[in-house]
Image 1: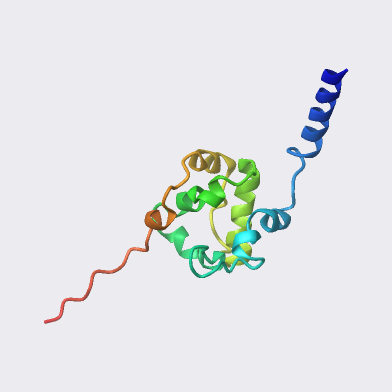
Image 2 (image 1 turned 135 degrees about the vertical axis):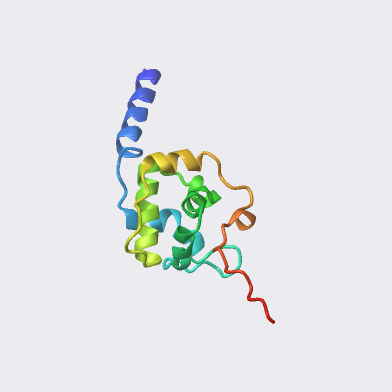
Length: 134
């Protein structure tokens, strides 16, 4: 009897939990806003402002970086949902209208290696060489 009850509870939780798709705005509130705030502003110190992610899409390794930061890579979401959440953050908070959407395969591949030092690993925009004065 105990085994049957355990199996029934496990099946019920699987049917209602993991397979239920959470709307992306709600996923942001549940998984991101606790640290970044409801508008994605961050704290100005250790928690970055999600409204300023657009430049990362313009540098080599920027997309990968966005997936590999620990809070993203370790989010308790399946890769398809995480891809939709990343696209939501870029579109709604950073104002990036035209970007290649994240797909579940790339999210799944990159999140397997979370960054240990996200600040040190952050890709920087290429700068132009300093002007030579004569």
